[in-house]
Image (cartoon, rainbow, N blue to C red; front, side, top):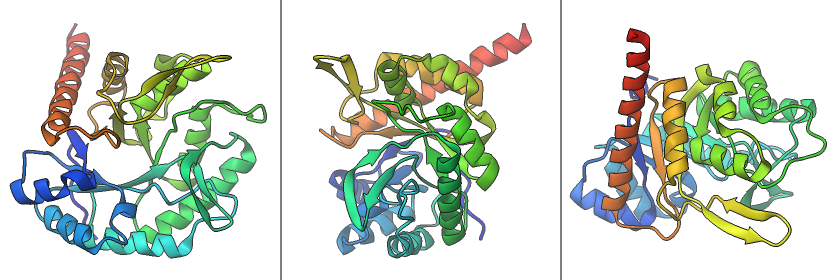
Length: 287
């Protein structure tokens, strides 16, 4: 199957609140990303989405394909997601380095796992199952972290690199997640980007977060996708573009959703930041 070309510019997360507006008005946007779980049991929303997909490139970002679950990938859910993918022919399919199911129950969280050889083997098997089922590469997203595991035997970037090597999957570098995790766990976000497997990056994400005061942990950043993108995340994004080159970049906003115009303005800023970062690289090479 010949898939659509992926635009190396910023797109917008398309949530149900803006679905009818986008279908009716067709606002200026490079591409949209959707959560398939919002459409599998909502025939009207799915009809609008398929109409929108005739006019815009669509990316599918699953929050329910739990590649980190010890019990394995839910094959029935994967079949439903595959059916939607076949209808949309998306430019990308992605999901999380996390687990969210246990013994048939779906949890409303993306939960962490230890970075060990056993976890690499588990996830590699599940990612291969997903890629075989959907017939295309799966983009794996680095998580927002609030704790680390004492049992971990490797860093997150090493863990991701091993998954790429074993499965041929692609990576979704969520730059805001890098900033959140680095602040919460006390490591250097810029070094993380420098060590990230850049050759595997197919997409980047940017989203807002909130800071919460914890009595015994100081200030913790919470990845809520409910705010404008933080200035520190913009700076880190510029560094990531200089490191990886221009990539399709999503503006994520899931809670306290603003107007579509606000989302479009964030996408425009992402394109401007990326263009300036590429100019920096060109100038450095010329000098």
